[in-house]
Length: 137
Image (cartoon, rainbow, N blue to C red; front, side, top):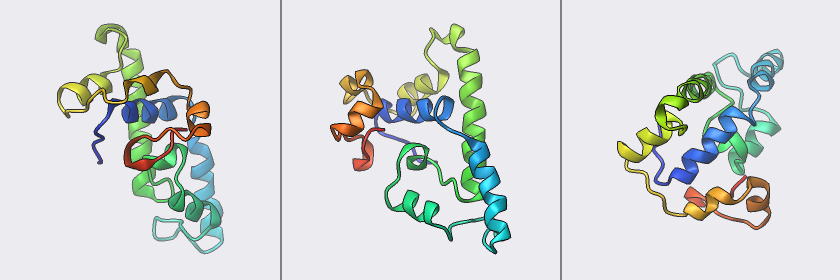
């Protein structure tokens, strides 16, 4: 698992996990590609969607490989954990536990803190860069 350097990256990943992802799309996509002959090995990269998301990752694809069982199971695990973090957030000062862990134990910093206040669609339009030169949004 890749550890990020900045908390803004952890924030964007958390937002995508909770609000902007649809695991059913990829789950049913696997069965669609297995019928086309791809996917029997646990990966389904032989399609235009996967190639596009690998060449220019956006959204959840910046953090997870959604076209393999390994990446998809990692995504599902983190999504379940994100909802658990939300449920226990009253006990962590309403800050999800993954932010406390990232800040205190993984050494992530608040560099670029002002990016927390930019909606991701506006950040993408103005080409605000996050970690690894990925655009926000």
